[in-house]
Length: 217
Image (cartoon, rainbow, N blue to C red; front, side, top):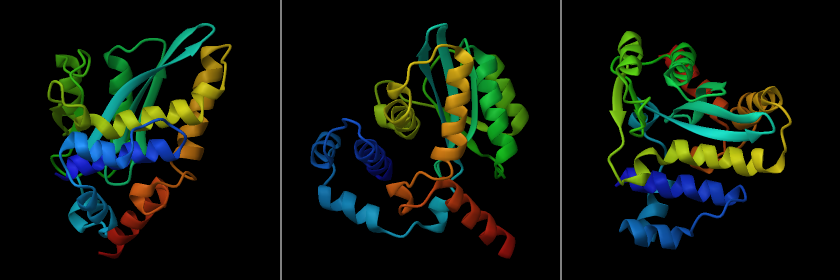
């Protein structure tokens, strides 16, 4: 049930940022959950179990420039919603997503058996990428066919990027797009953008609080 509530909350955040997602009532109806149940779930203090979720999610999106497409691969820490790993290139082959997950592994203190979840794209299900995950000690999870809310958080982040940045710009070169997106990820999304699902805190604030608690323990 919680994954459905997380999907609704992610889409709600997109709407708040200027997107065009359906209303909470509509989404609750489509997913077969009650509106009151969603708001009850949303008002609960984040549990220690939720804070220590193992599950990371990733996706690829594309940005148009006058030189051609830029492909962005992201890896998001579900507990803090921080974009912990990312990579950009002029293609979406396996090395792109490998660089993103490797960056996330450097930036996160991953527990044993950490999970990375994605859709069933051919690069995510390739033997080469499975080898990268195995080398990092990360277990792989892929979405079920036709179930959109499995990877809703990653898709919501992509939507937020498009609404808040990409759709407002025209990039002459791939480098211009890459530089602008890198700044948005590190300076805007991770460090200054408030998230309703985090109690209107930033991903970096939540990460810092978690690390402080870990140090105290």
